[in-house]
Each structure stands twice: as C-alpha cells, then as structure tokens.
Length: 113
Length: 116
Image (cartoon, rainbow over all chains, first blue to last red):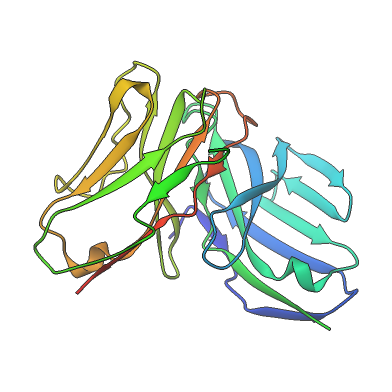
C-alpha cells in the first residue's frame, strides 16, 4: 500500500465549477501538506502549503487538512480552462526533514469551456 | 538563469549505456534534490544535497544510480548500464535550505529519459 493515495482521474468539469481534489495517507507522522500543479511537460509548481490540520485559502484555492482522518483536500472555485493540469499532493514529516516529500500520483484535471 | 535549469531536456539511450543528467539550481539555493517521475507513479525522492553535508542517498533505487554536486552548485545524476525501467522524467529541484518546512521548492522542467 502506498503511503499517499490519490485518485488519478482524469477529472473533467465545466468552466466555473467547483473542483474537489483529495488525498489520503497512512503515515501519521506527516505534518506538512502541500499541493503542486504540473502542466504538461513542465515541472511541478507549489500552489498551497499547510502545516498540521486546518484550512488555508488563497484566492480561488482552498486547502484543507484533517489529520484525524488522514485526509487532505484542495478546492478550486470558479474553475478556469487555465486550471487544466495535473495536481499533486505532497507531504512530509518533521523527522524526515521538511522538504523530503512523499507525493501522490497526481490527479489530471480538465476544465472545459 | 532565474529558474532551475536541467539538461538534456530529452535523452534517448540504448539499454546498457550510461547517461548523465545535469542540474543547475537557482543561484544561492543551498539545498538540491533529485526526484524521478514515472508514468502513474508520482514523484519518487532519489537524493538531496544540503550545503557541505553528506548527501541523503536513501532514495536511490540501485547502485547503478549516483549523483554528485560540485562546488555546492551544479549537480549531475549518473545512471550506469541503463535499463528500460529507468525510463522516466528526472526532476531536479532546489530551495534556499533544507529542513525548513514551507521553504518553497522550485522544480526544473525535467530530463525526459527513454531507454530503448
């Protein structure tokens, strides 16, 4: 069983929809949670970073962490065609070093006009 | 350059040959990482370098893989006697330092390796 599970999609939504992307994990030591966006043939870029449980909002993006359920989510409001990309969750533990990341496999998102 | 630079961007090699992949991190970044991204597998940690400390090689999949970082800047990932299962995108990343969570990690665009 992988430490981080993520539905690979693809997920197709109409423009303007609310998108929900999710990951589950098994390692209770994970404390730092991130979402990366990766366009085709590009490197991942950091979208959201959250420490421990709670919510964080940045523009149209909201990240949620529920450590009791070992479940994290990324919500995208008013989705745009430019949001079409692969979204990767990533996480790390304090003992592993803050930047030694364990990634999900990524969810491919397509926002259609 | 402004970002993490990797070369070559694409490499096709014959099974059994050695390959070298190069990474030039963002100027001033002391931490450098190599990850591998295979189809349907997500990003897999390979190795990291932090300043002059000994590298963490815990993610290297076999002794055919090695990496070095010269002068605390440019890094080279070497794969000896390549196998078809080595075909993947090799991503390099850098950050200002290591162990400071939330410290933004910047990725390059990757070296796309195909072993035929």
